[in-house]
Amino acid sequence: MYEQTKFLIAGEKAVVVEFGDEISEKINQKVRSMMIATKERNIDGIIEFIPTYRSLMIQYDPCKIEYETLLDNLKKIEKQLNEIDIPLPKVIEIPTLYGGEYGPDIQNVADHNHLSIEEVINIHSSKEYLIYMLGFTPGFPYLGGMNEKIATPRLKVPRTKITGGSVGIAGSQTGIYPIDSPGGWQLIGRTPLKLYDAYRKDPILLETGNYIKFVPIDEKDYKKVQEKIQNNIYEYKTYPKERNE
Amino acid sequence: MGQIKIVHPGLLTTIQDEGRYGYQQFGVPVSGVMDDFSYRVSNILVGNEEKEAVLEVTMMGPTIEFEEEGMISITGGDLSPMINGKSISMWRSIHVKTGDTLSFGAIKSGCRSYISFCGGIKTPIVMGSRSTYMKAKIGGLEGRALKAGDIVPIGEKIKNFSSRILPVKYIPQYEKEIEVRVILGPQEDAFTKEGIHTFLANSYTVTNECDRMGFRLDGEEIKHIDGGDIISDGINFGAIQIPGHGKPIVMMADRQTTGGYTKIANVISVDLYKIAQAKPKDQIRFKKVDIKQAQNLLKETNEKIEQIKEVTISQEIIKINKYIVKINGKSYEVKVEEIKV
Image 1 (tube, rainbow over the protein chains, first blue to last red):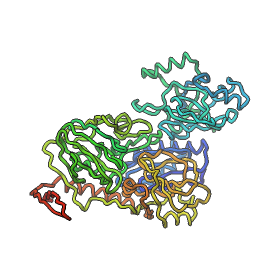
Image 2 (image 1 turned 30 degrees about the vertical axis):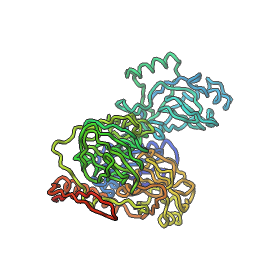
Image 3 (image 1 turned 120 degrees about the vertical axis):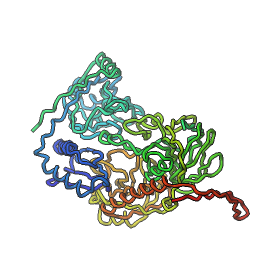
Image 4 (image 1 turned 60 degrees about the vertical axis):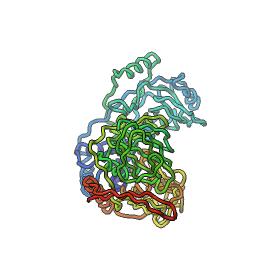
């Protein structure tokens, strides 16, 4: 983390508040706090935010708020960040059916790491993963903190179509494909949850700065959840993330 | 006007408005029109709100049949628009009758035309916008470019609409060699002094890889201090990425929300239209300005738009004269409209 937070210019309609030059949970928490604190101020002229690994882009309308004024405001907020009470991040449970046709590469992951399939599932589903940012395609979460014991290189030949909801591993990263797309990740399972649905009230399920926890389910549960999602009656399971000091 | 029918879609014709805001934090690109000035003016000329959805036409225009009479206007690059095979003027409102056909010919200037319809295009709003984002298949008509046979719904037209003409002094010129003003940053310190100099002192060529997402340019290699990769951060409209190979990529309307390449500078908003109207082989030079200048220029452009609104609304045609003019043995029919300003 920088000793002094940087305020960078990205054209005359955006500033970037940069907290560091590394991927760390601490820095990402700062990004989240800065976004929540700035949103609360309701500063006239701010259009929207792009939170990323280690910085927050703030897009604004310079005809409503000039750069100098916005910068003063942001610097004040940044100075008070440690004193502002920010709500705890949420952990959202992602019911996941591992292996079989839903996760055709789980054997690869097990073989590569000299583990059994059960061990792969246990390791993968035992952690709360921080959503560092969303990007690449609508709703795609960049997750951090996967156990190196299940790290596996990407497929040599990428698939041309991966079903939306697929859970995969690429190197020491894990992730979920929000929509059908091509890709080279080792697929280990699939969730019936829809990470992205343009026609839903909240089109994107996940939020930067929150966490996800994979919960293994069987095929019966998968179908049940899938049906509830389709009928719009599924209740998402979330709980507050405990602060790790 | 009810609806229009796409007879031939042209190269790439999409429904766009000002863009989809509020979802970049979730990884959803803004999209929207590439050339904001032409877009806003085209709506003003048909009496719409500035931000109604229009058609963005790329290089080869579509053929469109009007199923009801109405008013349209065509702005932006000159792709030789015609009604029933006869050339029509751009940057003014045009009355079309039921059964009329709009088509396009050769590119005379620029790259992208905007067609606005009195009443606006009324396709469904998806996540706050009608803009087409083809990669995620949202907005526009089924989230895709228009194709032959499509029917596009048009809103209620304004009654007793009198025509509007943009005074010539406001019409932008699209050159093959353009100067684009930029503000350095956010990663200008990732480049050597010489690298920044190279970027500002040389001319860059638009390559064939230029689309709604971004323009790849070719030219003198821009030197980094320590490589072109960064931990991914946010990307603004007009951001100029320099990957490891040292050649610029200007990020445009369909840009992804985040990216992992160093950004040497950002094109100022009022100059983005120059890139939107650039074609392969066109030359771009970058000129440094500061944020204060850029913000003032943006205010000036907004004031210009307000002036355009006032001028065009209060126009009244006093007299129409038709002449036959002979140039080099060819005779042309010329219509002169005198307007009160």
